[in-house]
Amino acid sequence: MAGGIVVAWSSRTGNTRRVAEAVASALPGAELLPADEVDAVPGDCAFFCGFWVDKGEVSEDALRLLRRTRGVPVFLFGTMGGNPGDERSRAYLAKKLAGLRGEGIRIASLRMFQGKIDPAVVERMNRTRPMTEERRARLEEAARHPDEADFEETRAWARECLEGMKDNRSA
Ligand SMILES: Cc1cc2nc3c(=O)[nH]c(=O)nc-3n(C[C@H](O)[C@H](O)[C@H](O)COP(=O)(O)O)c2cc1C
Image 1 (tube, rainbow, N blue to C red):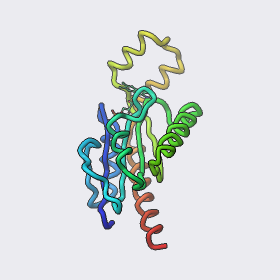
Image 2: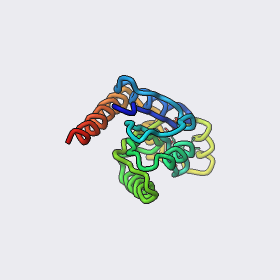
Image 3: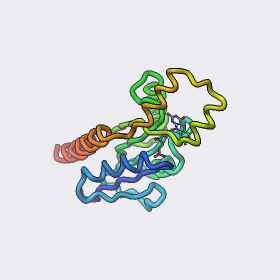
C-alpha cells in the first residue's frame, strides 16, 4: 500500500486496543498507534480507526481523529457493552454512521464487537438501574468479549478491507 497502513485506536480499558492489535496483526507492515498520536492521515494510506462507545457517543479521541481524515476512506471498528447485533444497537449504529457520514467522514466499512464493561462503571450503573435477568445476561456476555472468535473475525475483516481497497485501485 503506497501510503502505508495505519491502525489507530481509542481505548479506555483495553478492549478496543486489543481489537486494533488483531487488525494490525493481519496486515503486515501496519503501523499501530493511539488515535491522539496520529499526526496526519496520508491520503493514500489504508486507514483503520477503532473507537469505543462512551455514553452513546464515539469516544472523543477517535472522533477528533475521524474529523481530521478529510475524505480519506476509513475502515472503522469499535467495541461497546451492548450486543452490536441486537435491534437496538443496530438502530443506534445506523444512526451514528449516518451522522458521521453527514459530517463528510468517509466510512468505508464498520465492524463492531462487544466489550467487557469496566466493573466500577457497572457498579455505578447498578445503583440507578434495576438488575433484571436480561441485564445480568447482557453484562455476563459482555464480560466474555472481545474473545478469540472476535479477534479471528477482526483479522478476516481487516484482510477483506485491504483486498477491497487494492481491487478498487486496479479496477
Ligand atoms: C464511561 C463509559 C460509558 C459507556 N457507555 C456505553 C454506552 O453508552 N453503550 C454501550 O453499549 N457501552 C458503553 N460502555 C461500554 C464500553 O463501550 C465497552 O466496555 C468498550 O468495550 C470499552 O472499550 P475500551 O476497553 O477499549 O475502553 C461504556 C463504558 C464506559 C466506561
